[in-house]
Picture 1 (cartoon, helix red, strand yellow):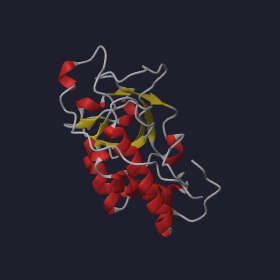
Picture 2: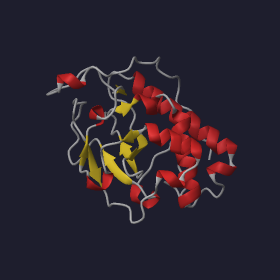
Picture 3: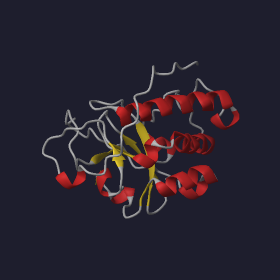
Picture 4: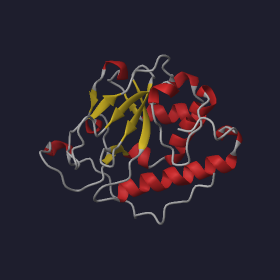
Length: 205
């Protein structure tokens, strides 16, 4: 996350906002279409208390189809986060040190990257908890509505060290059709794969 190079907020810069949407759309589609390693992506969800967390796929973590199917919703969250917390998102939408934007952080790799998708493997809590957690209630209607769907309604991020995405969402995308030491009951909610996207969009900064 680059805090110094960009002065105009996403909310005031349609060109930047469209570039971010193109980049995130490409990344999510690439991941959903992949049958091997996918791109390393960040996505954002809420918990039962309305707090936010950033989930880093490490190229293998599962993502709810509500996320892969709505890149504009994720961008809406980023627009509001930037407005409220004064951080500038990079063109690809990566989010380093989630606590700095008031979010918790979870990473599929954890302390030891598994090297492949494993059904039921959790995202692991990383980094420090936010000193001032950002709340869904502070976001605009588009972002808030998105996060009410991309929600872990039984979990509190502050109390969670590990989170299994497949347990919370009815349908997911994952970047492989194979796994090892899997939980078979978690292999069924995989959504149909889209066609792979074309070339990655170029950022213009």
